Image 1 (cartoon, rainbow, N blue to C red):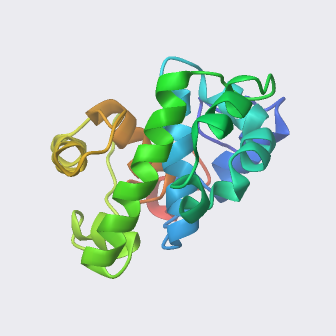
Image 2 (tube, rainbow, N blue to C red):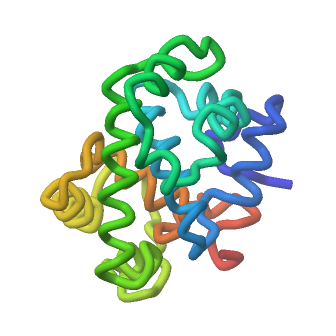
Length: 182
């Protein structure tokens, strides 16, 4: 079976991510928050590193429960900073806590984060035919999230996020999920 050229076929986590997550439309707020957190922690690192630590992130961040994360205090931040199984970056940890509040504010305003994020694409999946690291769409989403107070949401991170949640489906034409098969 042909997959996108970036997939490390020797890593089951990566293959599963490609086959079942990346480019698949996601409408579940908890998963939308999870993928946002993981994309933020990925900044400056390889996605494969994050996928290999995903279970540890789930455990450390209360299964990405934004209601719990919103109330993390200094003691919890220190606990996370001492957790050798995750990426220990204080700015990213604090941003995750901050972003949980902004995420919930967006939910209150839009009824769900899903309604908010998908409105940027007019509730339709977008397919590009070539490699990008950002777009006018990711610029727009990034700018709006920043205005609302989110951190670590630059256009490149948001572009990757939009791919992860399936707003963008950028599977290569040769991939079994790309071309006319998407």
